Length: 198
Image 1 (cartoon, rainbow, N blue to C red):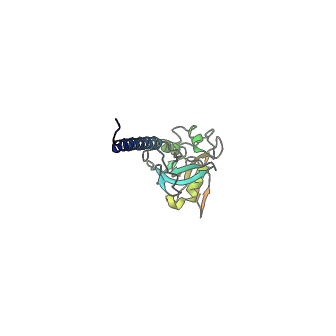
Image 2 (image 1 turned 90 degrees about the vertical axis):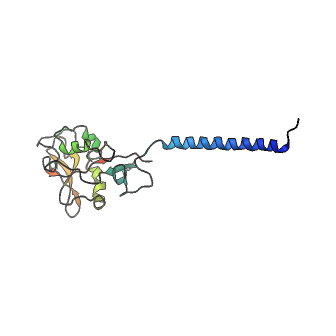
Image 3 (image 1 turned 90 degrees about the horizontal axis):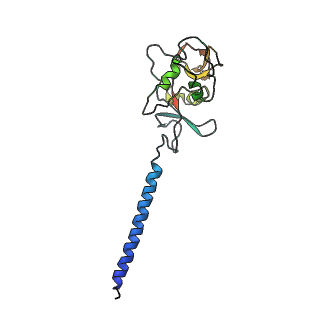
């Protein structure tokens, strides 16, 4: 028995609607899967924007697209300002000028400034570290944006030389310059982290 034309037509409409629904659901599932990975910072952000727990100070550190985010304020200290080390003694293998994370692994509780960053739990992130002298370049360039204190030195994680009693810092002398200081000198710190970007 032949079915009336409108029934055949309705059948095709229903099939078409089902295919559209199936495609739509599949597309939604795919988008959800793609966006389930979270990024600290979006690619549309620029230096000076806030993301990843702090302020972006570099979007191409080392020329390889590495982003650096710095804490928005100086990290508070208990009592006196932070010291690079609480006793005047040498520190081996902490002279990396490029990546502060390499210096961090050599530090002990005596390295008060670095420990303050390693123990920092700020804005939901715990992977902060004391920047190397090289990583502080973005802080120097954007010192007004992030509000650095021009009256006090800021410690880097870079020892002047392996085993030296001096460590690299930046200080304002009409412009921000690098200046080594005795490891037990008081100073301020900003911690940084390397956010995931996408």
